[in-house]
Figure 1 (cartoon, helix red, strand yellow):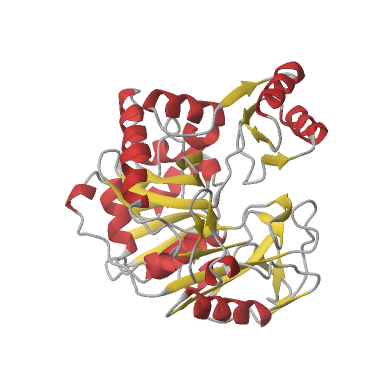
Figure 2 (cartoon, helix red, strand yellow; figure 1 turned 90 degrees about the vertical axis):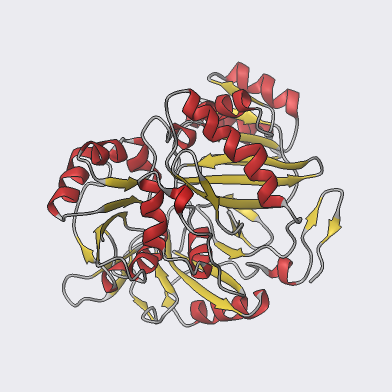
Length: 422
């Protein structure tokens, strides 16, 4: 099986490693890819959000399966264009990808499907936003209705900051605040059948102790030793299957990766958001633990045969990834700095490029690299991930020092249930 992988970030590097390790995959072509992905795939240039260009490349490269990594190509309809060529594609249609492309659409689907989530209002002017903020009170949660690369959400006690974010976005969803630790659950689906992957937790804010502005994610770990028994079954029953059924009812079946972002509240799990693709950086840790061949799993979802797929197999132990970000990230990341020490197993490339003159590895994005490691337990995996990051030299770089620390130390508290045990 020949696979075309669309995208060039850390998520795609993790996907490329998983696909290349599948004995059924004979070749991986990545477009545009990155220097890390180049170690396991042929790189090709393409405008990833141009449906016709991606479809043409899929035909040219003889792809048996196209895997679309980022959200923007999905919302742009790339999956539709590839399917129109008769090629299997892992990724939802543009209509189904509205689950991520529009927060208002996602809320409408959740309401219709009776999915447990936060109360919310869609607001398009200052007066409406102000009324919603006042009804819910602080902390204020304001979400850009459209795509914002993981940085369109503001959670703040500052009402003026919430209003300013809404004004900057235009159309927003204002929600009540959901208190409790967050969980990311990935679900592979062909629109009918659905297979959950291991729950993970990511760290969205730039600073230790969840301080500073939101980012695309500064690290992640899996599995979750503090997660309640039966959590996945409950989410599949109350969230995933009702959502898939509602999208089928609307004539927009969702086939691909449904990302369910949850808050573990005193009243039970509540949906914070849906995404229409693998999350970054949670993909790095979830796929590091997946023993089932990745190419066959994604192909089954892309061809409507997921119900016939064998049960998933998982490696023992845990996985942790720590993101190394550029100076100035997330507001104004500095690029073009030389990186050394990134040529080791477990280093995932997220925002890198090669210098034309001498082939030196350079920073080329806000999140530059991830150190991803596995271990017999969470503490061992965490130590190994930080050892990887500590071996990288990048001027002015920043990373959180507390990824997975609370879970290792048994300090995760679900409201009403007390702290977990280490």
